Image 1: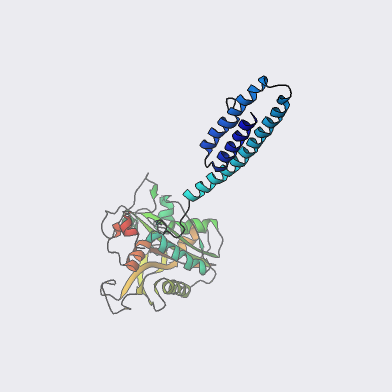
Image 2: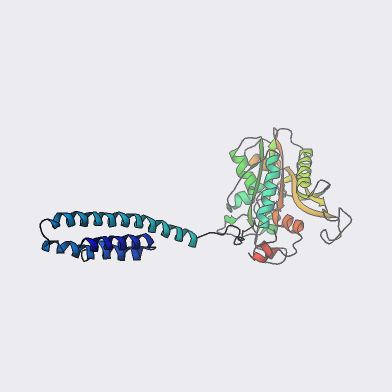
Length: 339
Ligand code: DAH
């Protein structure tokens, strides 16, 4: 029995020493330490031993069991280390592999130009004002010195929700809201969507974007308007840009003008971008009409101001050489990715 126990111990220890995975380890545990193990059956056989032999074999049996148990614990730690190593190796990352391409969106050209405009005017001390796109005809026309039946209402025909409520046809509406709510000095721009009942073609859309500007203070003159617009145009189109002011008529400004910039492509000699003109029209402007100031609660005897309004699409199209306005609204990523 003694030899049997010794042999069992040797075999168990050598098996446990070489075991490599958890399943095999479990088999060894059952075989050497389980209820039906050889060790258990040897110890059961102790009943037939003589009273002298019994404690000797009993002691030996216990020491064999604890040796196997110790070896088992060691093997268990070893197996778990091996398995962790195996797992780490199988999940190895090759950090030198090229990464998957992450596709990034880009800003819409209208958004890009609008934020450039905002940056330029913020740099000159303007703030950004917002106004509603659904308006009353008072803000869209009447308060801008364009009473009912004034012919200027026709050129800005828009979408009416009721007789008096409409989608704004111009951002000039924001001038009125700002003047009603603020005391001069006022220095704002207001970019946003406007609407007109125009059929869609390469240069028209029933929805487009404008950026309005308004400055009201004591002693504001046309010279301030010129200086402001020149600073803007040079920042937007390049330092060599020149401005041309042409007399015009708008109901809400007096005097009024249209403003052209020298063509930033040909510098003024004439090319396809400026259609041979050398100049590109970019905005309407003027000195705020005294009636407009008065209707919004500002005394025209004390204050004066200038205003301007430009179409953002027009600037985007000339700057990027886009010939069809519809491209701006179709959300075709092949087009949008170019900006
Ligand atoms: N609101 C005008 C339009 O939509 C543009 C404009 C012209 C705005 C002159 C102004 C201005 O503020 O002074 O055609």
